[in-house]
Image 1 (cartoon, rainbow, N blue to C red):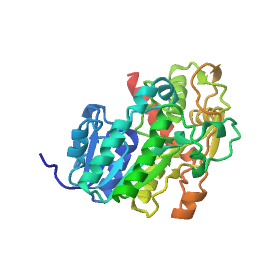
Image 2 (spheres, rainbow, N blue to C red):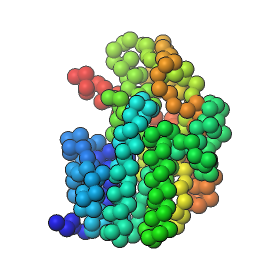
Image 3 (cartoon, one colour):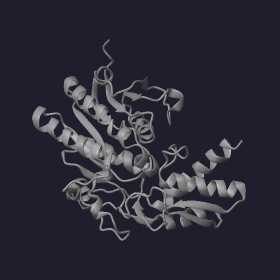
Image 4 (spheres, rainbow, N blue to C red):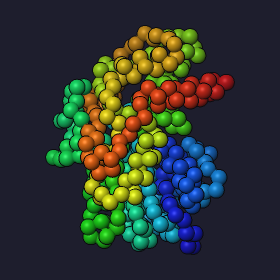
Length: 327
C-alpha cells in the first residue's frame, strides 16, 4: 500500500516535542503525517487534520511505508526519558538504533528533500562535565568520544550515520543536539520525566498535600541548562531549512543548579520545603551547559525564552495535572 503524499512526516509525533512540532506545522498550513509507537490514547497531543498513525518505526517495513510520500522528515522517535530512565535502561536506549537506521534508509529510498535528526547533549564527553561550574559545551567537545553510556552512544552513532548518508547518497540531513527540553504537555510522572517536570510535580504535590517536604536526587548542586519547547520547535525547523549539515547545539545557555530550580518553583507556589537529598539516586553529569557560539554564527539566533517564564508556565500546567490526577 502506498501512503498518501504529505509535506512532513514527524516520527515520534505522539511524544512531547513531536506534539508541539505537529501543532506548529499545522498552523503553517502544511500536511502532516504523525507516527508513534504508542496507542493514540497515550499520545501527548492528538491533532485533528493530521494523518495520525500508530506504527513501530524500528521495523524496516513500517519505516519504509510511513516515509513513503513524505517531502520532509523530522526524526524524533526514540526510547528515552529522564536520568533515572536512561541510567537504568541502557540496552533499551541503544535499541533505538534500529529506528534511526531504518528511518535513514527509508528517507533515502523515498528521496525525501530534507531529513532532521534530533540528537542530544548526552553525546558530549563525560570528562568535560565533572564540575557544576562547567565550561559550556561546544560542538567539537563530542570528540574524543565518551558520551552518556547507552543513550548517548546511540545518538552519537546515529549522528555519524546521518552524516554518511549525506556524503554517500546526497540525503540532506540536518542534526540538532537538544539540551534538556521542557514545557507543558510533557511527561511529569512515571519515571521518564526530566528534572523541570519532576521539580514542578514535587512542589505541586507539596502544595496540595500541605506536607512541605521533598526528595531531591543528588546534592542539588549539579547544574544544567533547560530549553523551553517553543524554542526547540522553532530551532528544529530553522535547522531543517538551513544549509548547515554539521551537528549544532540547540539549547539555552542559561545555567542553573537543581537547588536553584527548586527555589524558583517554590517561588511560583509560595511555599518553602524541607529538602531530603538522596545521594545514591541517579543524577547524571555534574554540570552541562550549551555553548551557543555556533548557532548564533550560522543562524543569527539562539533559544531565548527565559527559564523563569518557561518554568512558570510549566509549573501551572503540571499543578493542574497533579490536581486532576488526585481527583
